[in-house]
Image (cartoon, rainbow over all chains, first blue to last red; front, side, top):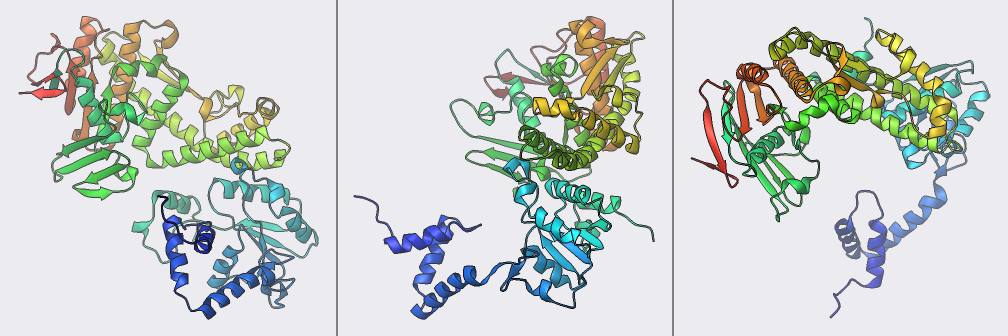
Length: 201
Length: 344
């Protein structure tokens, strides 16, 4: 006798869930079964929300941030400093920087980092769009906030040398001991970075 | 001093290997995990009790079945790096000869393992270097997709880690040579001198550069630029620490070219002793366990005496051999090994 399986529709939902990052076969099963117990109205709303996700949210035409219009909220905001641009890998990182409340400039999303081992070159990143923005000449400082690993560092160096000729300052975010953290809990790599990036008081 | 005495194939080396595995989670004999299991099993379990006054005793356990489990004092440990080097292990084994005359990759491995035992940050640079190197080679193979500017960007990361590795290796060679002066006199007896020569293999760019960080960085970048066309043709990076060479010289002669078997053996032992001394300078000297697996066969009588004298200065020694060497005169514990078991 063949092993009993879930009905087709349920399996269909499960296979979608299991495509999500961090969701395995078992978790997908749990999620789908939990949704079976939802009132019908709620499932409908969920379906609607999923449809709207693609219809209403799109990348900002200028910076690549999540946007509901042509431009994202930050690019539209007249109070932002127009002379400073912060380059990040992913749009989700903009929220992190925004939550700090200490940055008032503009952003540019690269959509990843240079990663030769997975075949990602400069063409796959939004570098051409960045060049267009920088050549308009309004930006006086570009802050590169790619991650401090090998690929992120190489991407930072690439951007720095690509745009070295433009009349602006290029800076790199610092890395080291987290603010408010105990030095006791920092790992060796972090301490090394913090020491090499020390500054004079 | 503990002798493990037994005939061939009774399991002497097996015991040494088990101790080594508890220290480093790898074997000196093989890198294939299945080769470590008793045939026809596909799993193994190791237990050890670590006593090192004044610290409280500690139990170490490894089991390897479908997955590896590590326990310290019966509590699970999830990161190998928390388990490795709970005690330090130095080996004198037949394979040590490769330090002098083996393939260069093996000698770099010796450098890398030794330096990371002494300096925890070294391993991080090494990993980052190899990641950048792999990326660079991938770019060299796909020049249409990755213009030279992307390679230059990677070069900056590559050079940063290469210089850190280079400096650490040079310093290591200097410290080793300082110790080798005394060790070679004690081991070779006569006025002979073993020295190590670390060669960056960047030709004229680096050999002349006496190594402050800034100069090295310049020399490396220059070297990469200079070799770029060639790298592009061969699709691989031709210079850097991954091509470096460690030569062993006896009285200015290259040992792997002009040395006898006995001389090469003795030089490899001298290197091990020097490393032992270096490790001891930094840690509690009694924390080192020394594993010896029949390495004195090729030595003449006088050098055997020298070797055993030198060894006797050390802490806990496990010495595997078929019979106690005549040259050994002090008292020692003798464990008879037969059929894979220790007999009383």
